[in-house]
Length: 124
Image (cartoon, rainbow, N blue to C red; front, side, top):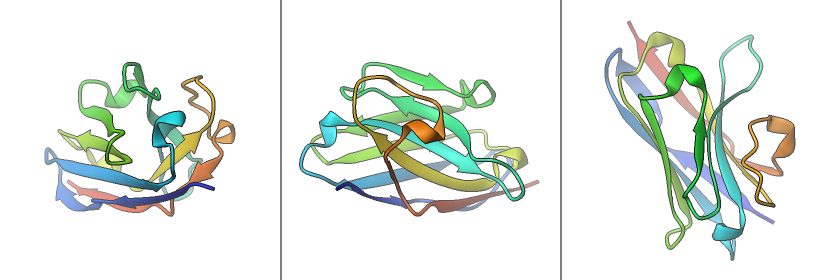
C-alpha cells in the first residue's frame, strides 16, 4: 500500500511561483513512476507531468512546458513540482499519483495510488 500526501498549494498572483511536494509512505519509492495531475471545477482530471522511477525521464502537458519542472528525491521518498510563471488557468486541485511498472503514463486510469490533493489558486 502506498500513501501519498501533497503539500505546498496556496494562493498566488499571476506570474508567481509555487513548489508542490508529494511525500510517499512506502518502502520502495523508487519502484514507482510518479505523476502530477490537476482538476479544475467542472473539468476532468488532466495530466500535468510525469517522472520515471530513477528521475531520468520526464514528460509534460504542453501548456506547462518551460514553466513547470517535475523532480524526485528517492532518498527522501518525495516528489516535487516547481511551478513558475503561474497563470489563472493553472488554478486547480493538484494531485500526485503513483503507478507500478516502468511506463511513464499520462492517463489517470493507469495510476494505482492517489493523494488527497492540494488547492492551487492563481489570481489575475
